[in-house]
Figure 1 (cartoon, rainbow, N blue to C red):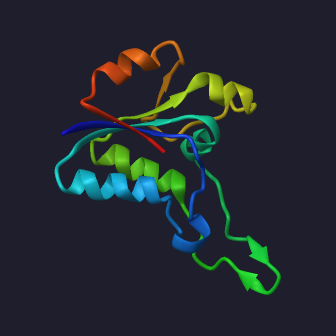
Figure 2 (cartoon, rainbow, N blue to C red; figure 1 turned 90 degrees about the vertical axis):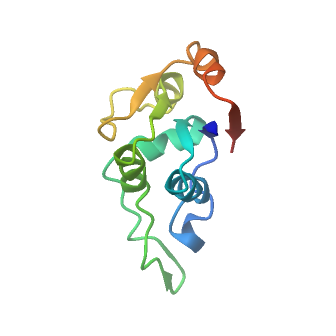
Figure 3 (cartoon, rainbow, N blue to C red; figure 1 turned 60 degrees about the vertical axis):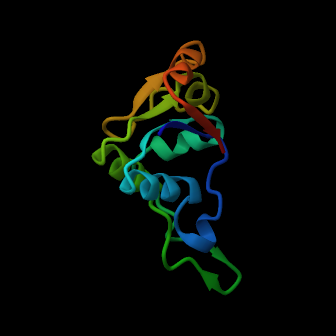
Length: 126
C-alpha cells in the first residue's frame, strides 16, 4: 500500500496524548511496512519547525509534564524513510517562509501538490 497523508489540523490531541495522533499513526503504519509520505499544510506546517517547546503550558493548577515534541516525531519519520513535505504557501501565510525546517523536510508548492498526489494509491486528509 502506498499512501499520502495530508495533515492540515495541527496539535490534535497533543495535550491528552503528547503526540499528534496522525503522526503517531504514520509511525505505526510504517512499522507495519506501509509505504507512506506526509504533506504538512495549513496549521500543521508548524510541525516542520524545530525548537518548539510546550513544557510551560498550564491551565489553572494543571501543568503539562509530558509536552509534545512534534518536530522530533517528524524527524523520526524522516529517519524511517517517510518523505515529509511542507507547503511553501502555507509557511509564507504564517510568516514562516524563512524559518528553519527540520532537516530533510522538503518544500512543495500548491501547484506541485496534484502531481505528488498522483504518485500514491491512497490519499488521506486529516
